[in-house]
Image (cartoon, rainbow, N blue to C red):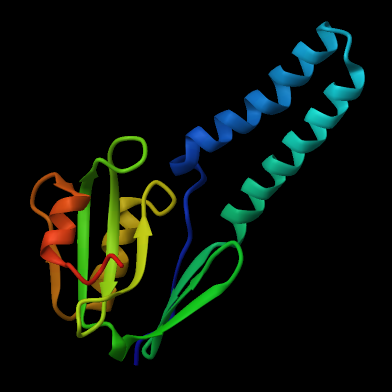
Length: 162
């Protein structure tokens, strides 16, 4: 019997979010104060602090739980539970290009019809975490050997992207 595995996101993987939050907290209020708009500076500071608190909360609370029966992905707003028996294929793409801001990684969990049950992406989940989850799930898997685009994935798994 397998014990439960728990995976967490890595704050360092979200560096751009942390940098943007720091800029919002430090720079924008300073600019507004320099322009003698104290009320606007207070409002912007409040919004920036709430955004920063949200980032911290999201990273601290997100988890992937994996046990003998299911995988549970606890996100910002909800927890998604998928029976392991429903997962027929894992598709790991260590170098997915053409997504948002350049290159990332992805792990797709697919059912027997090739539909996506869940999609996990870096930088929120590190590539090492994605690899570990795929390895622990076992079963049939596919790993991209080279840089792959979303269009390549759509051709290989046409029902995964609806």
